[in-house]
Image (tube, rainbow, N blue to C red; front, side, top):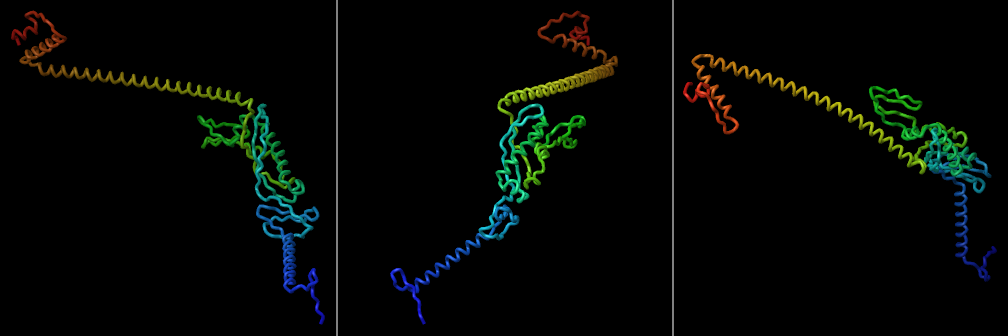
Amino acid sequence: MAQFESFDSKGNPKSPKNKKQVTTWIIWILVIFALIVVRSCMVVTYQDQFKLVRRFGKVERVIQNAGISFKIPFIETVDVIPNEVLLYDLPASDVITSDKKTMIVDSYVLWRVTDPLKFAQTLSGSVMNAEGRIDTIVYNATKNTISNMTQDAVILSRDGKMTVTIIEDDSDVTSNDMTVDEETAVVEITSLTEEIMNHIDNIESQYGIEILTVDVKKLDLPDDNKQAVYTRMISERENIAAQYTAEGQAQAQIIMNTTDKEVAITISNAEAEAEAIRAEGEAEYMRILSDAYSDESKADFYSFVRALDALKASMEGGDNTIILSEDSPIAGIFYGRY
């Protein structure tokens, strides 16, 4: 049987070892090529992704579930669309209120893709294109909302509620966008976010995206208006403080006058009662003396005691000289008539 041998470049026969190496290299090349083909056929979809499979530029199918799927290599291509909540920070913009005051609104939007096919058809599957469309829609909604509100209403609606004090059951707070809860004394108003969302049309059917919320980060005034507004606010607060101070002083004066009157009445009643008690004591004292000295045998002793009391009262106040007549009751003490 004839045998064929391979020769090298110099005409020498090749050894079996070289044949084995060539075979190994061919196998490795085939394996790598197979891996490349398999990898090009696989489509890996993650949890936060949509995959659009295109065939010659036309969308053939949409992969919405996470996992591994397959496509025709070199013929079908894959586009990635985000399947998560996205944040878009809108640039600050100027808007004018219904009372012709300019305000600067800085807000952001949370949005997501709900229909990847329509998103690709209308916005070319581009997040940048979607943000541009959202910018226009939200700005128009914000402008329309704030242009129908006064500056004070815009500020009040920033947080969606405010606390008020209801005096004497005066809970008749009326407004198209206000309701009052009498128990908690909190005025619930429609928040600025809700008002803006009410002015946003349904864009899901148009672009396959959904705006979840629009939140205003900051409401500000132009720099040339800030100082005037601050001055007016300070003046208003000073007027309110002065009114509260005047009302407090009036109430304090009423309380002091009432207290002084009550104190004067109490003192007057106490003095009258003391005088009455003192008079009763004097009367009782005189009655006791009268009972004690009503007997004639004790009349001289009574006269003696009264004379001593009169002498004692006369000698008070320093060095005194008393000149008495002989028939004086006091002189009778010294003459031994008692």
